[in-house]
Image (cartoon, rainbow, N blue to C red; front, side):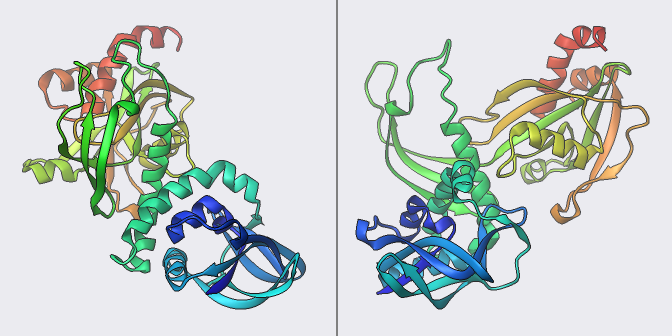
Length: 375
């Protein structure tokens, strides 16, 4: 059995129990303090690190009675973040105790002093959801491979959380909810940047009876922010062109696609923030206004991917013809400026083969006069 002093995210009991894979007994966790140490946010990240600092006190939990399997699971989870265990003496209400403490293996960029309540409010639920997926890979992939997958795992968790907290009731659709679905088993069939999850599932049919047991699979994607930049004064739009793997995998001879600006909603972002960020990164544009057009599933029969589609009001004077993209993401993006009439010709010719573009162009056609009258 081992004792651990936990000072950061793992001091959140729901996360700790997710990682070790079982509930803790009440007496296993108690408040503790580590003298001459301080805990800080890792700069621009959602987790902390600890460092020696004379006169400071790091507050946390002393967790006792952990089995070798518990420690192995914790090492696996923390190993993905490059943390190592070191023995130190911590103070408790019952006197000093020896415990192992996770320290960063490499120097970390320091942010503000760690605030557990702030982290729980913004990141707690998402981090627990991400850990639920991450710990399914225990014994299957290395901690280093897990660390490589963690950004995608966290994005999937954030997307799931946005979906779970959307409780708007249908207006014209069936009022059936998740309570009318029975999942007998589910499993991750594939995971890397994207994931594939298989389900053995039943759902309530319109006659009131439960369906047969179905073996189904879903592509687990991310939430996506999509923006059609539009200048109502010039009556022009900006489109971006880039290589797309989907058309290539389908056998398309011309797998470069014209489309609106688009990108994944990063962990901790709102869709609106992602829309503005992506428009700067892909098109070099600052938007004066962001108008929601739709929130929609592009292929609900097979995919969890979800689109937030916006019209972005901007000034397109002198824009177009530039090559942009995030180097670290291997993006290679070329921008085009089209007049509204050219956009409609693109629709009518069938050369527009990107669904968000077709939707956004038709929305713009319906609302163009109103937008231009206020320009």
